[in-house]
Length: 219
Image (tube, rainbow, N blue to C red; front, side, top):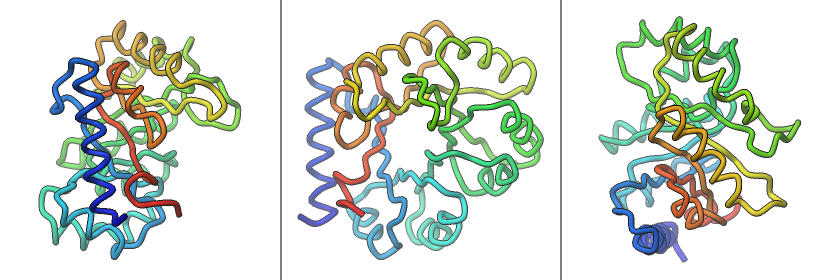
């Protein structure tokens, strides 16, 4: 199937999952993950009406998105991969949301560049729910203190949490844990769920689902 047809199928699945969860379709934002795909592969998805996209790397996004954003007004870009502190300025200039806030040095960098940016950028704190050593993110037991530091020490406004469950574990407990941490910290947005498990994530309150291969195919 074409990427546009895949997009329509994903949209139908999201609508079905929302209905099952007794939620409105408007409560869930689909982020089409376009990392590693060239502009030519992204244009059909833009032409089909999708306007929110996710990228993993600042440099890659800088190389292809400015032209596409000019062509398709209203497009939103979300950084869903790790962000180096020295790329914070570039990221703030390009992205509308950053899903991977996860350490003090990055908070410090963001606190310096955001006031000068002249634009609002949504921030999500990444929680390493599986406490995997190879994965970025704050350990669940450290999340509350880190969120307080984001607000009180660095003056950052945090919109929500992001998580990526371990590939070899059932995702539901990880989504439930993220939702619990968000609720007790007064956060309403949850970036969780990918191609294989976004319907489950919607059941647990995901407001943003990050879908790549189900739309674009495998890289």
